[in-house]
Structure formats: C-alpha cells, structure tokens
Amino acid sequence: MSVLVTGAAGYIGSNMMLALLDAGEEAIALDNLATGARWLLPEGATFVEADVGDREALARLFKEYGVKEVIHFAGSILVPESIRHPLDYYHNNTANTLELLRACVDAGVTRFIFSSTASVYGRPERVPISEAAPLQSITPYGATMAMSERILEDAAAAHDLSYVTLRYFNVAGADPEMRAGEIGKPTHLIKVAAQITSGARKEKLQVFGGDYPTPDGTAVRDFVHVADLAQAHLKALKRLRDNQSSATLNCGYGRGYSVLEVIEAFERVSGEPLAYEVASRRAGDPPQLIADNAAIRTALDWRPRYDDIDFIVETALEWERRLATRPDWAG
Image (cartoon, rainbow, N blue to C red):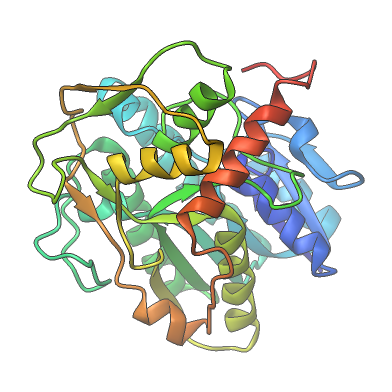
C-alpha cells in the first residue's frame, strides 16, 4: 500500500516526501511540474508526472500502486495572484480537488489529508484563532480552500473516507539537512528577505503596511517551520490509521512575529543590516494571523522541534545560498 503525495515536487510536498521516506513509508510523488521541480524530490522517489485533475491518470496510478492514502498539496497559494486571477484559483484549487476526491472514492481510497490554510478565517475577530472561528475568507484563495474543505467533509460523510484537514499558518524555512526548500516566484516575507540577504536580489525589502493595529504597526504572522509541518502530516496519517475520527486542525506555533521582528531575526542570523522600506498595504492581508494550536497538540500529540524564528530564518537563508550554486535551478 502506497501513500500518494500530490504537488510533491513543490516546497511543502518535497519536504513531505522526505519525511515519509525517512519514516520508511512507500510514497508516490505526483506533480505536473507547472511550478515544482523534479530535482527537489528525494533520489530514487517514485514520480508520476500528471495533473491532479486528470481522473483517468489518477485511476491508473491508484490501480498500479495500490494507493489507499492521499496527502493533497497540489494547488495555487498566492493571495495577491488569486485576487487578479480568481477563476484560475477556483479551477486549480476547488475544481481539481473535486476531481481528485471523485477518483479517490472510485478507487476506494480510505484516508485523505488536506493542505488548507489560515486564509479561510479572513480577518479573524479574535486572536489567537481557534478552529471554531467563523470562516469568512476575504480573498479568492481563502474561499477556494474553504470550499474544498466543505467538499471533503461532505464526501467523507457519504463514503468510506476519513480525513484530517490542516489549516497552515505561514510556512517557512527549509529542510535542516538542506535536501529541499522553497523555489520559484518569491512572494512570502522570509523567502524574499532570504534572497535579499544572500545577495540574490539587489533591492530593499518591501514592508507592506506600517499602520496596522499591531505593536509596531506591521503585520503579525505565525511562522511554522516546514519540517515541523511535515511531521504534523505524519501524525495525521497515524491518527487515521488508528481509526480515530476525522479532524480539522490549525497548524501553527501559537506565537506571532511582526515583519519588523522578522527583519531583526535576519540581522541577528546574518550579522548584517537588512535594508527595507515601508509600502502600502497589500489587498487581502489581515493585521494578525496567529494560531490557537491546542487542538493539534492534543489530537495529534504534535510536538514541534523548530519553534524558533532564528532557526527558521537560518535554514531559509542557507537554502537560498545553496540555490545560487545550482545551475539547474530556474528562479
């Protein structure tokens, strides 16, 4: 029996493949390589190039490899892009998740782990945010993920399918052994700051908004290390294999850092100043997103190892420096 990982050649998917293979699991990597890179996958990993919305390809894959468990990462995740191109996001995130679930039901897949997002909460009324907070997405990205969550919940109620949905907060950092990390179009704060600090980009860091109702006026986010996130998925898989109930859980550390605090972390780690300038707020950015993570700690017995902003920054920066030496990387 194999675990299928969709979006496996992307940032989080490739770290998930590492975690599965390190744990001795038989994992199949699926990716259409639209934004992922084949070289991010562990050496020797079984790879299938196909689109997650291609039900015929999925049916063949499920049959050939005996897939009964799916961890679903494939999708589009850029908030500003979703505002400019909402129909692409509804297709790639919601419609393709629907097709994947149809294929899972047809093939008798019994366990499903879904990669969701804190963006489903929109501008939360209370922080930290619990799973009971209302879903009031303010961007197409958040809306597509909330819709996908509901589709999964309804499918599980009607079929022999159990699930764990993990609502990520801000994923950052790289594999501590430097085997996988974030590539592609830089949009997230820590990725962009790492590029500027490493010299890959010659510009000032843009701080989007200096007038938020936060202690220093900049947006506050709960940053979770990608390796801890991968371990949360392993814990979720164990929960389902133990025949425990389906669950929807926040995945964050429960501690927020402002943009300026992240800049200070880069300066501590690198020993160099990081030049920045304050720009206008971006559409769709809430002032604060911080997880109430009591539920995931209890439900999955999740104990993060890398809850340290300096370590997150250190691995992101080291990864960026190593990328500069890769002739096969297209940034």
